[in-house]
Image 1: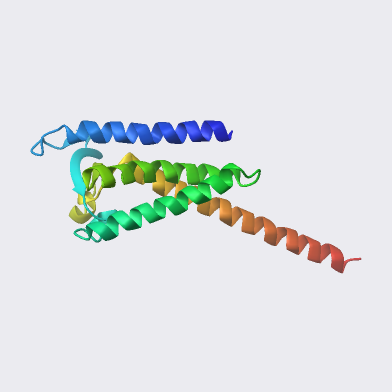
Image 2: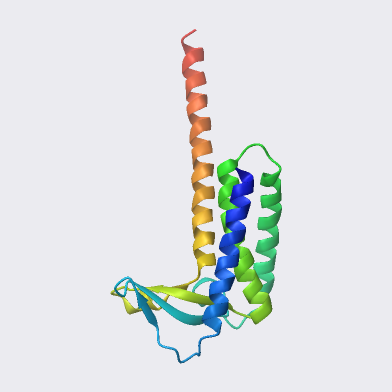
Length: 170
């Protein structure tokens, strides 16, 4: 199973980098494209900061923070890779790593991250937010890791209760 997870994660990272390269080749003046009846919008945005452009202009901090977070994620990933437990945590971490690699590559090579997917929304501030596939991998992977951690804690609690109830009836 882990082999497939690694393969899919590498493919997602590669696909994101491919789309970013295609978007970068478009002129800055290129018109935003609409898909699915305007629900999804394809556009080119350069993000010089973290999520939502936070800390734009703090290049060293953003690059250093991204690199540090990427290294910590890679260390955790390697721990899970050689573990027989935590398959869901491994899947989520792999997904997160695929997004981190793609965005870190952009940040170090270009000096910014290329975002290209927007959504239609009534609120113009929300409509301006733009993502890339790597961002969705990071968010989805984090959700899987959080769900796996929560499920593990719930399982421990249930086993403790069960043990407590059984020992009380003897």
